Amino acid sequence: MNQSSILKKILLLFFVAAFSFTACSKKDQQPNIILFLVDDMGWQDTSEPFWTDTTEFNKRYHTPNMEKLADQGMKFTNAYASSVCSPTRVSLMSGMNAARHRVTNWTLRRNASNDRPHPTLELPKWNVNGMQPTDSIENAVHVTPLPQILKNNGYYTIHTGKAHFGAIGTPGADPESLGFDVNIAGHAAGGPGCFWGEKNYSASWRNGGHIWDVPGLEKYHGTDTYLTEALTLEALEALKKPVEDGKPFFLYMAHYAVHVPIEADQRFVQKYLDMGLGKTEAAYASMVEGMDKSLGDLMNFVEEKGLADNTIILFMSDNGGLSAHARGGELHTHNRPLASGKGSAYEGGIREPMIVKWPGTVEPSSICNQYVIIEDFFPSILQMSGIQDPTTVQHIDGKSFVPLLQGNKAASDTTRELIWHYPNRWGGHGPGIGTTSTIRKGDWKLIYWYKDQSKELYNLKNDIGEYHDLSEQYPQKVDELSKALGEYLRSVKAQRPRFRNNGELAPWPDEIQKDISIKK
Image (cartoon, rainbow, N blue to C red; front, side):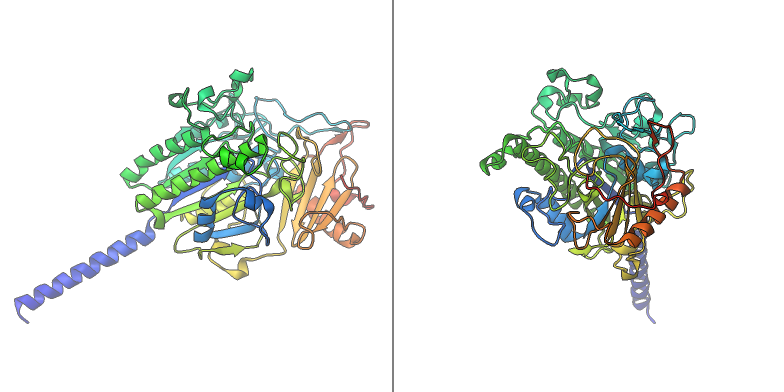
């Protein structure tokens, strides 16, 4: 063999080895992760249908980037969260069910409950100080937070927008204490003072408290930059560092939109006024579209940087769409075909629009009808990132939905029990809003009311709007679900209210033999 042939063989082996190394490195590379969480977005607040039918609401809203994400990923039609914000966010970052972590209502001031007084029940002393990275804070749950685990395993972690993890003056109020390298505009408050840059994102212009002022965005004060846009611009700027450094990133894009105050995004509102919507609903629709633009801007960024094939995007909302107050038109109808809205145990309060894009794993334009819940995000994201068996101080209740993303039909489970526990009283009033515990198993859903121990039973497959209480027709199903709900609540030492008239604890769901079926 002459020298020329030997040289050619050496070069060939070199290129094969180099290609193999590159392919292997790309395969083993940790994916970038964008978790895009919208505040108070309802199941129907989008032009992307999540039901079998396209509804009038789907025709109203304009969310082309959600449509694009659904075309590129998997749409979940039965995704759930808690009915109000802090319980969802703590479950998301801890993997715990709300009944276990006891942050069952929204947090703000240290050692102060935001429960509204109940006429007949004394509500329990829940973890009003929220989620904490230490065990030294009273009335709080100590956790190993998701971003801290990701950071410890090489991720550059960015928090943008609403935090609402811990009460004012506690470590948990600061996202950086929970494992985020960067915190943009996150603090203890669960809503913005204002969405308008002209008003400095503060409620002071309408004599509101400074407690709601959005921090850290002073550069936009006095400008016409809508809050959603300011957060997006800052997130895009923060992403430059990990991209330049070649590090995987975790971006938690947690918008304040579409929470109250409902304030028009002038970039989009005119089209909805021209459609004939009233001022409030046109403003709300403009907020939805502004949120969608943010999603599109992030999708464009990873595409332009050549990162799209190695970036997972998860889209979710923290509770159902607001419908009990502050909206235009008839109250409690803004999430139809689902009943009621934020704060309610009915589907309008807890069912969320969820989409996951994972190139190379998720089949584009696929749909998953298996029910999942917010605490499932914790183990799922860890599995996506390749982090195995992390050490946590808390018990993990969530179940990874990665097998569902992989198209594993065996992962569907109609025997799984989803639990909601709300021994509290929210500020709103309306259908399904009250002190309840709820279970879903298969197509069946049971709601237990602590006030009078009544129970409601629905078959969601046949009655997504929860119009027909079947508790009298199916007493055995009521007993079955009551037993499962009671056993779970006892197993996690869930809190219960007491009766004001005698100080006794309200019974567990399965301690009530006679089912009283009264539609709230």
